[in-house]
Image (cartoon, rainbow, N blue to C red; front, side, top):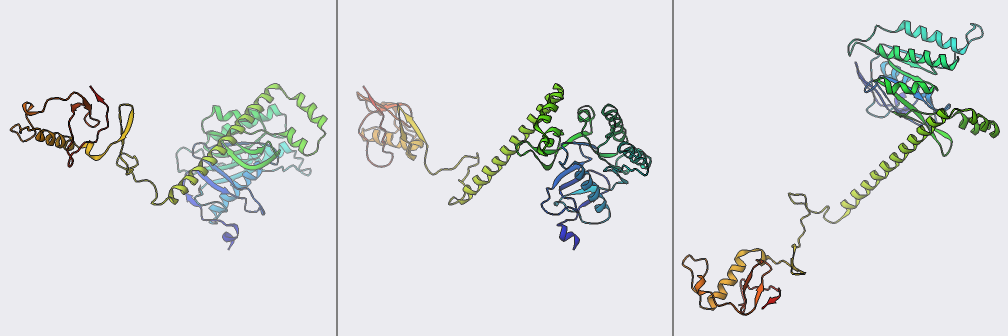
Length: 382
């Protein structure tokens, strides 16, 4: 009953391999939920998710963690068919802000306390496939402290988990962490999509594309004074603005590619429908893949094009007409039964005519009716 309510099929459980969730939905969200496609453990084992606030980064981590635990507990999961997950030896997460006045924990110290606990609970380093991986989910890694030190700490932590073979997904706003995907095989960027036209997140997860935080854009959308926004833009370094422009161009190119791909698929579907609706289906094909049309080919004669009739393509037709003509002129067989000897061929007339089927000059004389009669319309030369 629960699976029917969530529209949840049975996932594939593997001892080892990649995590692939197709059209995954958070099991506790209701209403119009945007599904995500996420994978981890095939081409890469570490996923660095960037993008704007309120864009869905934290929800992505929670969705991956909850669906993994549901699958390993024997429950169906709210995804599309074909989703699969390996069996993880540990599923560990640091998500949200656990600051506490009673325990004198700030945002940074609460994150560090959780990360230390995660590192202590990790299984031994994975030395061979199938020996059991751990899944670690870290939200806003390195946040809550000086940005320079936070970036350095986050990078060292990501590299440590990656070297141990841990399946890791982290979210961050640090631009420096986006560069790890270009220097470390097995680390991949991802981002939550942001619509530049509506200035709102679409909540789609884009693997392979680094994202932008869009802090100033979101602040303007939430009502912050425009003068403050413009003043803030003047403080942003030119290098950061250049990186944002490059990322914006990449996102625009990706959108254009997706649009062209969708249009091509639509045109292909329409063409298939038209082809199937024609009487008799598609044109018959020959062995060489060309359409077998009932009409014959045309062959040029002089500067004109004339229809090539079947008798033109048969040597027997031209030979029969020549034999009949020579017989009428008194010629005799040449002894081999294949024609007349040159001595018996009538004298050449003044004018000669070029035959379209033999491309040779032949004697001009009256054409007898019947088999092999010739209808060449070539010009007469004197």
